[in-house]
Length: 479
Ligand SMILES: NC(=O)c1ccc[n+]([C@@H]2O[C@H](COP(=O)([O-])OP(=O)(O)OC[C@H]3O[C@@H](n4cnc5c(N)ncnc54)[C@H](O)[C@@H]3O)[C@@H](O)[C@H]2O)c1
Image 1 (tube, helix red, strand yellow):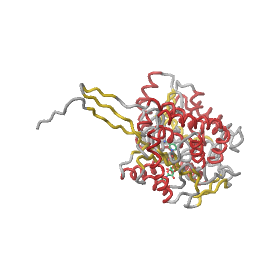
Image 2 (cartoon, protein in one colour):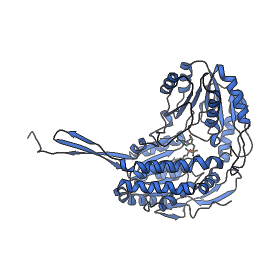
Image 3 (cartoon, protein in one colour):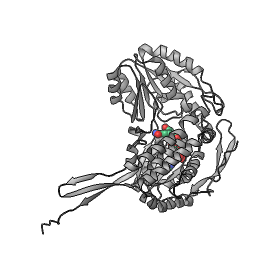
């Protein structure tokens, strides 16, 4: 299988070859090499940032609706090519084609469409002050760096590019070194949609290339999607230059199922919240709290349904559960599963699996202080816990440093909203899980991040306000 791009980087509207280390792209299902890239050298990162800085002012000077039109055109191109793009996403990530066809590029297209549509309404404020008045201008930040994770590479690139570009910023994007292909397609598509050269650029490489990008003097803002440890490093490095940041980091989110919940829906949600994308989703509800009265019924149904999940070739449209993105990540997950067993938790289903595959796995009889309950695993591993009453479960759900997401299943209207209000999380779902429509802000609290992606809220993280005071009379002075 061959997924070789024209070249490894995309700078100033053109594909250019990297001058850094070699970067092999492997298909997670077979381990075969599907593309050979070259990372960007430090000089190429600096060059990409300088190009972006050159291109940005003219882009920012366009009428916002002209910028918006480029984004909506890009969304249409993505939808026209969804089949081809989704196949590439599957090769890059190993995720089943039945997922990538509906969830990845489509979500990216929705972001481009949403922010493109928002363009004409991005205004400042008029502030009456009697005779004088003031107004605010919402202005671009300049050059924004985007750094992505490997689980939703193309969606992440679009979620960052769309609000950045509509505000008149330029962007230099570095995808994860595990999944470098989708971002190059986005650069190509944006160019085709009419984006001026240099406004969106792609560099490749690992943490060192990301670090060079974060501290480049042209960069005014860094938006990272990644793990908490990386977030800490990037946030600290960005602080040196007083750069703006958005941090979309990891989680260990609670999903609470009360006795009165619709059992089948709650089981569906718990499965989606742990097994979709082989569990490689930041907001996954990996701590499933079951109220004592429905625990047994819930676990019986869960085990039964988990057994029928079809694992296999990601390009087979019937496959529901694909391989883990890399051997390194599969090893990490297996280490965590072994740790859970060693600590005395019991496997209801699943386990270590073989090769690139880790089956849907559920631990029961775990305690809140076990590593499998506390730490992010980032694989298809659920920990089912038992609770007795609302106050207890809210306390236990919040007893974590993470705060990305949370879910509650109940038919009791007041309890649903009371619990959602009490949970320490950036996103709470009531009788649903992991739905992230572009209209809704998305992001974490506590260690799970700062800033928000999606919705009009994201615009605030890609712009700054200038206040203009307008004196309409003479100047009064005491001297
Ligand atoms: N909150 C969200 O929206 C969200 C979404 C997806 C994934 N995630 C999180 O991402 C993690 C999995 O992704 P990952 O393994 O790719 O994360 P990671 O933290 O290892 O890497 C993320 C990105 O940061 C880069 N990077 C690493 N060190 C850097 C440095 N010092 N300076 C600049 N860049 C650096 C990497 O090359 C990569 O592109 C999980 O923790 C997951 O929860 C969060």
